[in-house]
Amino acid sequence: MAEQEYDLMHKDDVVASLQLDDLSGAILKVTPSASPELLPLGGSQGADSLRKWWLRRAVPISQGNIAALLQQEGIPSTQRLLVRNLGLSLSDHYWIKPSGSELTWKDVSPFSNAFSSLSEAAAAHFHSPDAALQGDLIKKWLIVDDTRCLLKGNRGANSQQSLNEVLASMLHKKQGFSNHVRYRPVKFTGSASEQYGCICKDFASETLEFIPAIDVVDSEKKDNAVSTYEHFIHVCAEHGLSEQEVRGFLEYQVLTDFVLTNTDRHLNNFGILRDSQTLKFVRMAPIFDSGNSMFWDAPRLPERSDCTEITVNSFRKTETELLKLVTDRSRVRMDLLPCRNEIAELYAKDDSIAFVDSILTGYEKKKVLMERFMEKGLPEQTHLKRSTGFER
Ligand SMILES: Nc1ncnc2c1ncn2[C@@H]1O[C@H](COP(=O)(O)OP(=O)(O)OP(=O)(O)O)[C@@H](O)[C@H]1O
Ligand SMILES: [Mg+2]
Image (cartoon, rainbow, N blue to C red; front, side):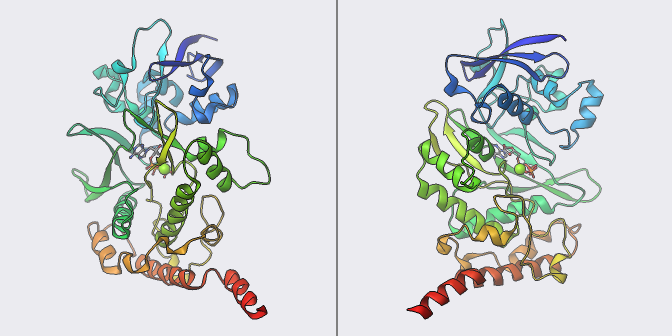
């Protein structure tokens, strides 16, 4: 088996020596450096965890046109594509340096150097940070007026996921909650029907790097008696965040995801920002990726359901279970939520979004449920409160 030697780097510090499989780009062997604290948090629990972190770092084969690109360029795997692009990312400061190379972070950092899209990278002699870009939706990094920006598309030929991101931005703004990504709609020209994508600024920088919650959770062994939710809060507190801040953020996110029916708040869809010099956690990363919401994949659902049993991909299996995590219901103001007309106006940008009335009916049903929760808590919590009052 042919192999290649690389150093895994964190800016200009060597984190580990790696032997990579020439063909697949997978990690064959890891020799950690004398600074284990520099290992990526999600790959810090032994060689296997680093292998998995590397695999997870590679752009998913299911994203956009990646499978076609690999075939066209004769690249055998997404990890190999990642190696070709030196593992560079615009979300954090890890990369790989071929053994014997004199390259420095200054030479390669996508935060300060030009870069290309994946299809142009080889011809343009640039590296592309898109090879380390997660998520299923088609997307790419761009430089707009010297600012690193992420352009996202949709699944299929309607714009709802992108417009949902714009809606979430509008909601957080109206709530006066500033720690969220601001997505703007972008019209894609050239397509037969008018379609919108969305664009947002990079929330990582030369000094701050993003660590997804999955890596925070995986960085320490969890006691079986402790939930993943509490474990996440505990690890964040150990790295310098206040428990109150983390809980406040997560509860606000649960509440706003509920009203938007965002069913996809998995552990790669939120995280923290870390100072890459001190390695201390600085704050929760701004709320991003709220696109899989507003009944985007089941727009007729609200017509036949009371919307009380919606399943989610998150810390709990249903929205109702998630609401149980909320200790302070006043984190969201009902009177500041977007109204039906504002949402209708936003969706009217794209006439390919079907069943808008049904989606809006769903939103209003959710607002009623939320109102009830705000006033009385969940039915079983009401019961608890009532019985305590009765006993007294
Ligand atoms: N503004 C940003 N700044 C830095 N990194 C970002 C930003 N937005 C997204 N990312 C990174 O890119 C990844 C993919 O982005 P995003 O979650 O928006 O895509 P997606 O395709 O909608 O994901 P999913 O498959 O969860 O639906 C994120 O998990 C995060 O690591
Ligand atoms: Mg995502």
